[in-house]
Length: 501
Image (cartoon, rainbow, N blue to C red; front, side):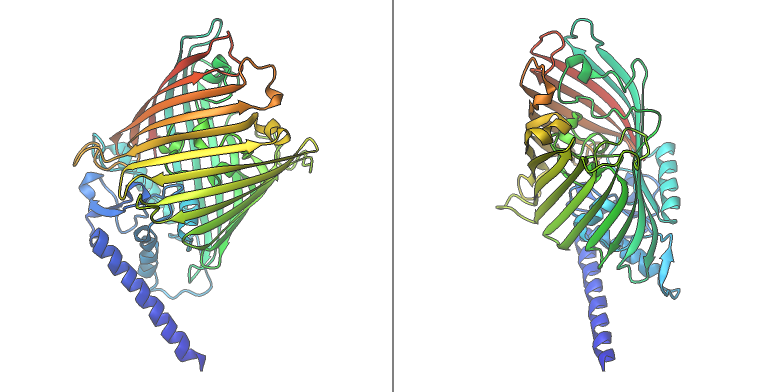
């Protein structure tokens, strides 16, 4: 007797999907073979003519996600529509190397699904052979379940005035490859297995990234060159196996995990690979003991659109490119919990996400405790202006791991468009950002010239081709804690050219 009820439920569910698709089409416009889904920084996706971005196979497009922004229904619907195209063949059990990911709740989707789109509209050049080739490779690999983001950049930095006896100019190439390989999912998309990965590489042309940088020249606690990725050759901060279930409400991963890929996200300060401010203190809370390349476990739960929770635990003493199973000890271990509250509209200002973090760790057998807060808030309904802030406090045992006892960062990002059409009209990277930072050093940083360090940063991103942008950046660091010649501060001027594939 349950069959009629089940059938009616399935029909109702199908009707909901049809209504959702109709609503998306009504809002964004009906998609055709000549249209491309532009995500507009994640908040206001709409279809635009493909001529604005060059060659893209719209029938296979899965729009790029934006870390910190819940994936919009129009973008989620893309994957389900592709599933419907493939559903003509009967499916029983599991699909292996699927062309589309399994279901994830909107915020979790933004963390675990990269999408297969790399070309951006609104560049000075609307198309180029490199961009067309990069997009074709992404489309091909995504049909085998592999989705990724590849960032490759040339970076130049100069410190002025240059402290006596210190290097003042730095030139380097840096790359980062992150992604998710969807290995298998069941036929109703409610659960699946995937592999996540990250590989970083950096090489200074006139310095060793492992030993020198603008940070060492200044003697600062903050790292003005958050774009540096140099290590002993290629560094693997993450290789982890994951599972998602319960219709995408729950995710778990185990392996070596770069926790900063998931925890403490903020859409208005996405870091080097997202066109954000370049000082590393803006990419994530510098007081939080987020680890990478260490053996650990991470789980995330999003029961509804307006709330999520994450928990991560890992060792803290694995050396770069060493076996993560070596030297495991409960005396070097950390735990962190994050709760996020997602609002569609806060006091008429538009969407905002408010995050709270609590951490507990063992550092050389001592118990460390601390917490943090992370806020991203749009400033006006449908406004391109957004506000971000992070703050953290650690006791001395926790602060010994990061060197930061107390910190606070805050700033503004003015996102594109900057023009009505053409260059500056649509890129998901173009922005003008301004940030302020304050960090108080932990006692293990003694001897110190200054106890408190401050910084200001102004940055701008200009889209040149669908996969390349330029970013000039200017910082001033006040009171570097280890000021190398007693100076009270210096400018750090940077220019980087970034390929995003």
